[in-house]
Length: 78
Image (cartoon, rainbow, N blue to C red; front, side):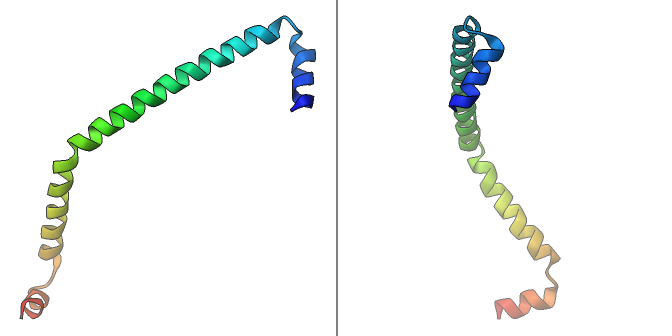
């Protein structure tokens, strides 16, 4: 870490360091805001999709039943 910091100090100079740190801080705040907004939207969509999940499960069961041969269904129900 110290070596990387030293190289950055040599390349950019001392005047760039506060600006770089400030920009990194602003970027982190923006990323955190975007992450929170994404999580909120994801939670809303997951909640709204609840009934659709039940429908999808029923459709899968019906589809599987339609693909099952009649003999297998009769044996299963006897």
